[in-house]
Image (cartoon, rainbow, N blue to C red):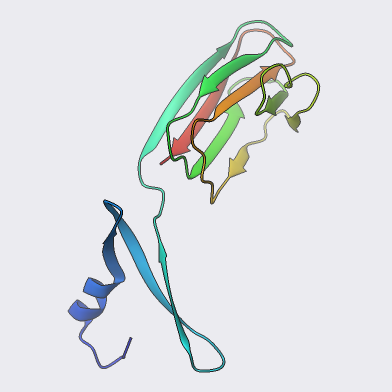
Length: 132
């Protein structure tokens, strides 16, 4: 994109329609002088889940929306969390999120995904923030 274009022209070409969504169009200038056009669909629609984990060391699940692009997951209280993507594996094959930590997953392309989680203490709330 030429710098001689007006600001209005540059802003107009920055955003475009892509599969029914607004996408960001970026031009990257490589060292060779060639340009590469990249289009990305940023995560735009947030959704919050407050998942109850009433019993310690007992798996609970949350079905996510279609086309999740980003996730933040944490325990509201004072507990460690275990997370898995297969039912019954949150106690055997899991990722641990330590007490007070946030699990952040970006650049995702999830569809038909269910999270399986458990905490090491009873009466906890697991907070999940997703963007589609």
